[in-house]
Structures are given as structure tokens and as C-alpha cells.
Length: 517
Image (cartoon, rainbow, N blue to C red):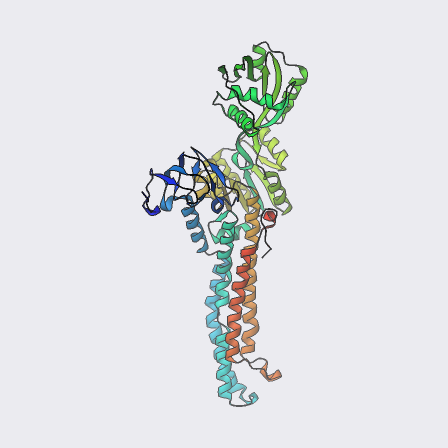
């Protein structure tokens, strides 16, 4: 039975065939397929979906049939909310637009005054300078002033650039909720990052793999074979790494967990263990000095060291940590080159925070900061004169996101954080922070260029239309030419704004083609 997307309800089970669009957000119940999520994430490579994976309404199912249960429908879907945010933002007016509106309000009576003065001067004061009928000349000059001084260009200068800029941002995977956010981003001089889940992945990952006497793949087989029976986050990290590297994970013949120490079991009939020194020494396994030194070096880097033993000897070490996100170092480097002060605020302990900060290139760190105090720290920076952007992803970041001059929320974060941010990054890519700021500077720069053009046009052509060149050069500006000039000014402003559609921020030029607008 086919049902229109608008009639779907939460809890409905929906079959999506190859080539069809996913009609709602939900979770896959059955089947496997690759889904093109480019319209949501901007990633061109389709993502494999299987049982338990989330699907997003509006994405395209490529090659397999899947059944999924709808969790969000209609206006509650991710795509609908993105559209609503963009529409709301495109209708907002930054302070520079309000300034232009005030200028237009003063502009109209000023033009009427100039037009009246033009008529009176040419009709009665300078009538002797006119070759022909002074009344006709005065009327012609007055009409030219009124026509050429149409304030359309002033009215279009800001909203056209803001609308195109916000649309372009959405294409790049950046949702800007308001024109004010664009303007504030252009004024920033400090960017503050949360650590866990923002600069780092937010979950443990195997970062170091050291094998002794066996190859790395066998080391992963042994460790993952035991850890596959555990639900500990460190165990999940080991199993993920083994699967990622293509290791065949054996089934453990036996398994036992020791809280705070590790796990033991039998793999292929051989006793094995994964854990800390206390566990291995309690089993009577000797830890050579060389291996113990390597383990300590891993721990000095702020990581968890897991010793792997098999048949009564240590065969390897796994270093596990909350790994840095792929582009975090490059993003911080670019921000520093742009002149920003880059800081990190985290609830983590000073040692771990310092290790991450040094690795990523951040010089100023505030550690052990409670969630309620993050906003207070942002306020302290603002009171010292900084214009601050805060980048975060969790519920605990929401107060700081709201306090910052510009709150930038990671789209993969919590709903509360996303609601609190003025800018939302659809992709979990910190280079998009840089791109958002670069685009904001470009858009506000284009608004200023539009306003300059509009004011310069009026300042130059209103006096010409009033006849200022006539006494010296005999040049008069006829109404038909005034109309063409007025239309040209509006077309110029709109064209300058439309050029933003082709703008590619410098931080994105390695990943997306195009020319600078």
C-alpha cells in the first residue's frame, strides 16, 4: 500500500525501494542499501545502511530495499527543520540592514527637497542660463532627479547579499540561523572550543598498536576475540579497530571480566588476557622492562595502555584514547593564521586537556570547568573586550553557546546544543567553522560594497540629474537616461550579491571546485 509522505505517522513501517527517496526520519528494521545523503551532509559518497542505522528524510536510496520505522515525520524531520532555519535566517535583518533602512527613510524626504529646489532654482534663479523654455527645463530636471534617485539599490543592498550568502552556506553544510549571526561572525576575534566531542571524536579509539613477537593482525585478533564479549567502551574501541583493519575476530572459548583491571579468556584453546599491569601480574605474567617502558610512554601521552597477553607472555600493547577529529589541527592552524585567539574550555582534568591542547596547537586552556561555569568564562572574555565564538556539541555546552557572540553547534551533537547555536555545522568537520567565518566576512563585505555602490551612485548622479553640469558643459540628464541609470544601479547590486553563489571559502577550496565570488 502506497501512502503520501504527508500522511505518515511516527511508528509507521515503510518500505523504500531502490531509487526512491526516504520519506521520513527513522531507523532501519530490515535490509541493506547505500543511501545518498549529500543533500544533508554534503558528502558525495553514499553511506551504507543496515539494521539499526538511522536514515534521514529526503535522502536517496540507491541500490537495495530497506524497511524502516519512522521516528520523525513532516515538519519534524531533519530536512524540514533545515529548510525552516534557512527561511527564517533569510528573512532576518542585521544591524547594517537596519542602518540602511534608516538611511532610506531619510533619503526620500531629502530627494523630494532636492527635486523642489531644482525646480525653483532653474525656473526662477537660473532661468537666464537656459537655452530654451526655462519651465520645460526645470520640469525635465526635476523629473530626472526623482527618477534617478529611486532608493531601490539601497533597499536591495543588504537583503540580497544576506539571502544568497545564507543559501550558499547551506550548500556548504553550514546552517546560519540569522543575518545577525553573519554580521557577528565578521567581527569575531576569539574562538573557544569545547574538547570532548568537538575537538575530539568523543569516544575511545585505538591510536597505538605495538606487537611483540607476533604481527599486528594477530594481536588484534587475540585482543578483539576477548573484548568482543565485553560492553566496556575500551573493549568496543578494540573491536572497532579490529573490524576496521579487516581482522577475523575469533569466538572466545571462555570469558571473565575483572572490574578496573581487564578481561581474560581462551582464544583458539590458548589462555589470553587484555588489561592493566595489575591484572597481568596477578596472573603471574612477567612484564619485561622494555614493554613496561613503552606502556608508560603511552600513558604519559594521556592515553590508556592495554597490555595483551597470550600463552603466558605479553604479546602487545594497545593505546586507547579519545582521538582528535580529522581536521581539528588544520582548523585551529587556519584560525590562528586568520588572527584569532584560539582557546579550549573543558571539564576534563588539566593533564589530559593540556596534552590535547599541545597536540592540536592551542596555547590557552581552561580545564575542570563545570558546565554552568563555561558561560561565565565566555562572559569574562567578552568583558575583556573579546568578540567570542564558542564551538560545542553537548547539553553541557548549551549555556556557553547561548552566551557567546556567535554560538557554533556541531550538527552531530545534542538537540539542545543545536537549538542554542546561531550557526549549525551539518557535517562533523571543524574546517566548516573556518568556512563559516570566511563566508560571513565575504557576505558582510559584499553588503558593504553594495551599500557603497548605492550611495556613490546617488551621490554622483543626483547632482548631474539636477543640472549641475549644465552651466559649464551644457550637459543635461534627460528622464529616459535617468530611468536606465536607476535600473542599472539595482541590477548591479543584485548581480554583485548573486556572485556569492559561486564563492568557495579558502578552507574549502581543496574539497570543492569553484571560483571566488
